[in-house]
Amino acid sequence: MKIGLDIMGGDFAPQATVLGAIAAFKMLAADQKLVLIGDKDIAVSILQENNFSPDNFEYVHTTEVIGMGEHPTKAIVQKPNSSIAIGFKLLKEGELQAFSSAGNSGAMLVGAMFSIKAIPGVLRPAITSIVPRLKGSLGMLVDVGANADCKPEFLPQFGALGSLFAQYVYHIENPRVALMNIGEEEEKGNILCQAAYPLMKESKLINFVGNIEGRDAFEDCADVIVCDGFTGNVILKLAESFYDVCVQRNIKDPFFDMFNYEQYGGSPILGVNAPVVVGHGISSPEAIKNMVLLSKNMVESTLVEKIKLAFQ
Amino acid sequence: MKIGLDIMGGDFAPQATVLGAIAAFKMLAADQKLVLIGDKDIAVSILQENNFSPDNFEYVHTTEVIGMGEHPTKAIVQKPNSSIAIGFKLLKEGELQAFSSAGNSGAMLVGAMFSIKAIPGVLRPAITSIVPRLKGSLGMLVDVGANADCKPEFLPQFGALGSLFAQYVYHIENPRVALMNIGEEEEKGNILCQAAYPLMKESKLINFVGNIEGRDAFEDCADVIVCDGFTGNVILKLAESFYDVCVQRNIKDPFFDMFNYEQYGGSPILGVNAPVVVGHGISSPEAIKNMVLLSKNMVESTLVEKIKLAFQ
Image 1 (cartoon, rainbow over the protein chains, first blue to last red):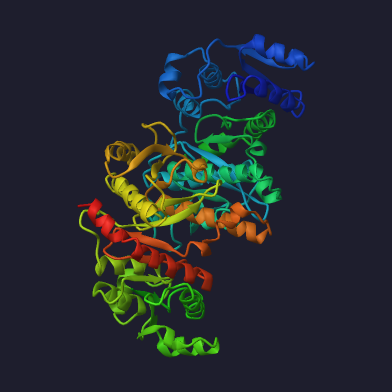
Image 2 (cartoon, chains in turn purple, blue):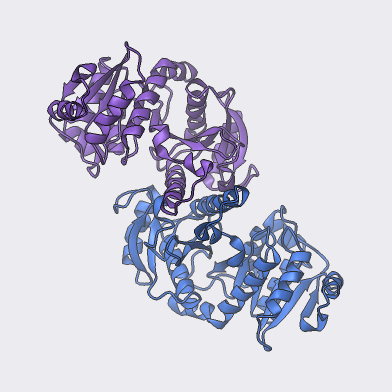
């Protein structure tokens, strides 16, 4: 298995990404090779500074970098030698079994759609994020930003993608899928939710348990929470800000610690033809390590094959 | 000044509402009369149990109650003798200068729209909620649920309503208005935000400072945060759930304490022809007291007149 890692992506790259690669290496089996994509000279010099043999990794040297603020579609087209564009090229050609980056997340999404493309039957791939819950279990929030505007028929699919991820990567049996809404009753909500509810109820791909509200997000009422990407992105960033508040105010509590993005490693793009994980821009070495391990878990679980089968 | 209070509304009514009325009475001037709307016999017996003279209040005896789970429009039409329907009737007739209830919030909204109606020029009245911020200042979130689906032109108006409320009731000068979005740049967001941004930039009624993201909600970047009612409702309930988590986990911190809904008293419906405040369903006597005081402040500020003038 070869796992591609964009070492140029993220606010603290390449230092944080290369240190993360070292940390990940220690947790990978001998046949799980990490391929560092980016400026090889810089990578080697960081490794040497840390007394770590560069021979432990494979390298694909690239000469361009897509900045965090660049326009995703333009950047992917105009920088074919960027670490992100090259990563997707190798993923498409089967040289890599997974690709991850903490760089420009829009470029990661566009790169995935242009190269490996959506799985047949998947109307819109979606980005999922892991949310902690009060009782210690984990939940999945789908979509958190790939699709700011959604048609009703996208939502049961987001539920199915999140369910398969929960089931095969997090070993949650028969995941309960809920729709994020502003009332519990079936007829509540905006037009999108009102139209999506019956579709979710009918869908054979999900175990639909109905609507939940913002206040239920951290309760154990559902394993997969479905929403449009606008709502999901607002929820995700708001939840992260609570963790930041706790850090700022020196509040120590195991529940809030679970909001530390570092331990989840990143957000998979679900519904494309290979495992892709997008890391948080501020990824630390710990976050990069967990992003690589999540990529590895996605490959091992054969999640992409499971999704293909479900959407046939 | 006569302030109407629905003593039948809320999960802990009429006990919590009558005790709240007692607490509010102690903070009102002699010419600020509280009018208790609901079952007079029950009210008087609660007052007597608490050794409080019933003569301190005026009463409007009503015989019906709209339940928390009832369909708002049906309930308002089918229960003309309910405390909410009667409250709005008196407000419309000028017998009351403000009306508040911690009961069915949908019925409060429908009641306001049917009786006192929207101020000319206001496309859609909106419910605003007060959000605490890390540095101690207060912000307004508009809309938090009156309008689950919005047209772009509603959003600058929500900003204007929130600004006038912030300015005249909370004495925030030249309030900064931001659009809740999923990126900071002008072109980011869903179709609604993309279309609303230029309208907000052009609006002469607001001091527009651009987009903010979920993570900025508790920072001091804006005084009024504008969003559609679906997004606002999710944000509000999510933020409340963080407070609940703190209470459950016995985390004591002044910032999280500020999320205690009790101290804000309720959420005004802005853009209708008289002051109306909707309380939280779980309102305690403290929350009811603050709801009454907020209603009083809205009357004293002549906010409704200020809104009429701005929207002329």
